[in-house]
Image (cartoon, rainbow, N blue to C red; front, side):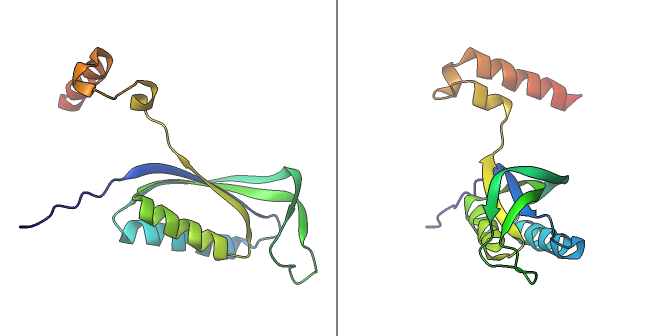
Length: 142
């Protein structure tokens, strides 16, 4: 008997806040590491967006002081990564971010799709879900 293991791919948005003093090369290397971790484990990186340096809602504290002795930050660089991966890979990505000194905070959000707006407990009995599935089939056939 063989057991079939089903890997669930979930759409995630990872929003991270980096130090505003973080060097471009360090952040680029971090994004490459995260992307490589996701892709090597069967995931898909949909987008990486740099939202720039912004004022933080309150003072953020870094785990360790940097070379200049700064430990508190009033500004931060916001970066979003949108990807599909299994929950285990998401936890590994969080681990990479938690170990990086340049990242002050990170948050993973489950991305939204049109099915999340509908109660899909019994999909076969729900006419709204059936309508959406039929529309998807028609648009996929074209």
